[in-house]
Amino acid sequence: MTLPLLSVQDARHLHLAAQGLLKTPRRKAVRADVPAAIQRMALLQIDTINVVERSPWLVLYSRLGAYRQAWLEECLAAGEIFEYWAHEACFVPVADYGLLRHRMLDPVSLGWKFSAHHLVQHRDDIERLVDHIRCNGPVRSADFAREGGKGTGWWDWKPEKRHLEVLFASGQLMVRERKQFQRVYDLAERVLPGWNDARDLPSPEEARRQMIKNSCRALGIVKAGWVADYYRLKRDRYQDRLEQLADEGELIPVRVEGYEAPLFVHASLADELELCRQGKLTATATAFLSPFDPVVWDRQRALELFDFDYRIECYTPAAKRRFGYFVLPILHRGKLVGRLDAKAHRAQGVFEVKALYLEPGVRCSQRLANDIAVALDGFAAWHGTQRWHVSHGPAQLLALLQGARDSVYVG
Image (cartoon, rainbow, N blue to C red; front, side):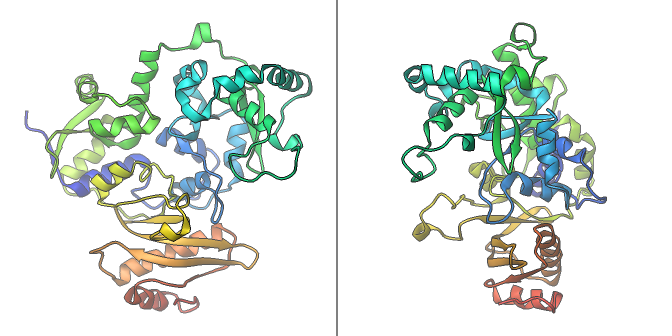
């Protein structure tokens, strides 16, 4: 059988279609769009940095447009999603709780996220903490005073914080809700009272198989080397598994220019694949992606698929950064064309673009400038800032941006 031959741009379009990033949203977002978007991505990674809005909110904005940030926490409190270690710390559809339950039952594989030694060493204190929650209700880490003054860094946690994290990793506690983005912990049996391991727990192989299927659906187009990263599965030879899913009708084998081995398109994208064959699948969206967006969180996949070499530099010493602290990839009509080093000055009502970078070979055009300007208009407004300005960038693009928005300061 002759496999469909796709261009690399077709492959990008299929991936973005699966992620909900191919087209600009046509209607105003409603609350139900939030859990639907998380279901579509399978996982929504959590990060607390807020020089612009926090990452999970950014990921949703890039797909939904302007929406109420409170909806995400409402979904968590309503039990539509839950938190656990998946790709990293993630919001996950509650229907997929069973897929990650095995990690809770055997959390040693989580590495630094769990310490069996800590659990044993502080058993009495941890049991008292669990009893406190059972008798008095949910708690936050902030409910416990630090002894000896202020902490000295992210990992200088007070004992109760470490206890809570160990109990969370082992599944004894879950996050019932977040208040001002702080976790509120409660007993797992109170957060998910209907769950029963003996009745509901899939086998490890069934859970792994479903995570592979979820990854293929979320990626849209996949090759064996891209499978493991999505849920942080063990590195393995996944080609046989993909071929089996293709035999079952879950995946469609295709050829992509520049790739030696076949890739696989998820069957849910059969209509989009047919449009690719006809040369009619196009991208219209311009968006600023979170550094923790699924499109770029696998650095090797982003390089292979988008020719975009991306490193998250917020954890890199300032002197070694190439682009900035919290740099947002710029998605423009199906391509990753640049990066935005930004900061929202909410008190001053200004969204500052410290620097705007274009990728090598990207041509400055009025359409690119117009699309970026429109995207910045909406982005700034959603951040509660009335105006935006760009401090540094390619001279030609700055001039085009200035022409597109006479009222904003550029340069």
